[in-house]
Amino acid sequence: MQSSASRAFSILSSKIHPQLPLTPRESQQLLALLTTSFRQQLDNEYSRSPRSHSARPQLHNQSEDVVTKPSTSGPKSSHTLASKHLENVLTNPLFATKPQRRKSSTYDVKDARKLMGDPLQWFQELVASGSADIESAYLCLKAVQRMSPSSFTPDSTNHGNVGSKISDWLWSSGMEKTKPFLMNSEFIDSLVPCLIREHQEDRLWRWFTRSLQTRIREADVDVKQVRLFRAHLLKSMVTSKLNGDGGLEAAITTILRAASLRSTPSIGLSTSDTHLAGRKIVNHIISTTTPISIEVFDRFTHSAKEWSGQWELCQAILWLHSPSQPDANRGLEFLKNEAAVSRCRAPPSRRLLVQLSLGVARQLLAENRFSEGQWVLDFARRNLSEELGLQPERPPVKESSRKVSQDELGNLQLLDSLKLDL
Image (cartoon, rainbow, N blue to C red; front, side, top):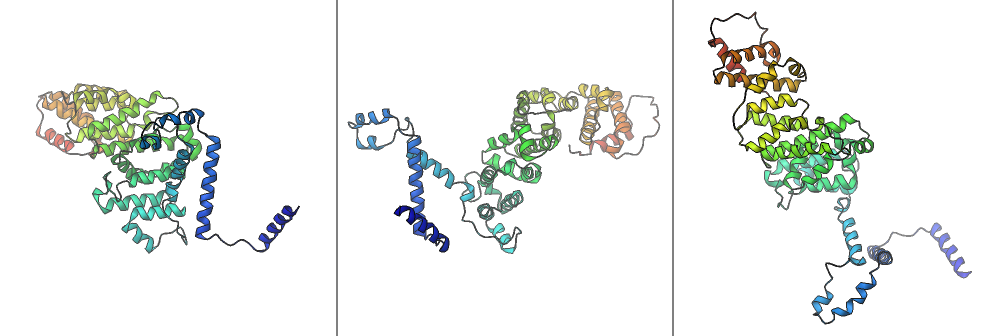
C-alpha cells in the first residue's frame, strides 16, 4: 500500500514539477544502462550453445593468448552481435554530424561559404539536421568536382568517397525510392562517375535492376518514367566508361550485361531501357578510332536486337565500321528497304540514318562503285534534305557516263563534313 501511495505521489509531483533535463553525466549513465539492457536482451534471445561452454575447458592446455582470443569459426557471441548492431546504428549517415538548427530551408551566404570550403561537411550537416535533399546532394557533387579533378580518386582522404557517402544517405533516408531521385537526370550524371571510380558499381546495378512494379508503387510514377530513369542511368554508366573509366570495351560489356537481364521477368526490362546507351556506343564507334577487338565488336553487333528497337539500322552502320573489313553492302540493302527506312521517323533514328547514308556513299566511292554511290547520295537528298540543311532537289538530269562530276564530289565533301550527334 505504501509503495502504491509513493508511486502516486511521484506521478503527481512530476506533473506539478516537471523533471529537469538530464546532465551530460546522467545522459551517459542512461545510455550505459540502455546498452546493458539491450545486450541482456540479446543474451536471452541468442544465448550461447551448451557445446561452446563444455568445450571451453579443453582450451586450458593452450597458451593464454589462444584461450582469450575469440574463435573466428564458431558462432558469434551476443556481445559481438550487440556491438556490431550498435556500430551500424552509430555509423549511420544520419548520425555522422551533430545537428545544427536551421532557420529556414533556404541557403544563405554562410551556407554558400561552407559549400565552397568543404562541400561534404556542408552536406553532412544538412543530413544531420534532416534537411538534405536531392538538390543539396547535387550541389555537393558539383562543388567537389570544381575543387580538384583528383578529388575523386578512391584513396583520397578528403572527398574521394563523396559518391559512396551520398549513396549511403540515399539508402538510409529512403530517397533512392522516391520520384525526385528517379527524375533528376543531372544528379544521376554527376553521381554515376563517382561511384564507378570508387568501385561501387554494384549500387548502380541495384538501382537499375529494381523491379518495375516495385518502382511504380513506391515512387508513385508510371512505366514511362521508370524506363526513362533506367535508360538515363545506363547511358551515364556507359558514358563514364567511354570517358576513361574502362574504355570502349568496358562500355560494351556494361550494355551486354544489361541486355542479358531481359531474361529475368521480374525486372521487367525492355529495349527502351537500353537503347540510349547502345546508341551512345554506336556514335562513339562512328566518330572515333578507338581500337576494339573483333570478338567484342562482333558480340556487340550481333546483340543489337537485344538492346535496340532499331537494331537493323544499328547493325548496318556497325558493319560499315567493322575493325576487320568495312562492309557497305548491308547498309546499301537497308537503304533500299523502304519498309525499314520508313520506321526511322524519330529524330535520333533520322540522325543515325544520315550517318549511315554518308558512310555507305563514302565506302562505295572508295571501292569505285560510282553508280551505287550516286544512288545513295540521291537517296540522302530526297529523304534527308531537312537533316542535311539542303535546298529542295531539282529534277534529276541523266548522265551520259558513270564518272562522278565535280559538283557531286563537292556535295559529298559537304555531307561528309557534317558532324551529327546521336
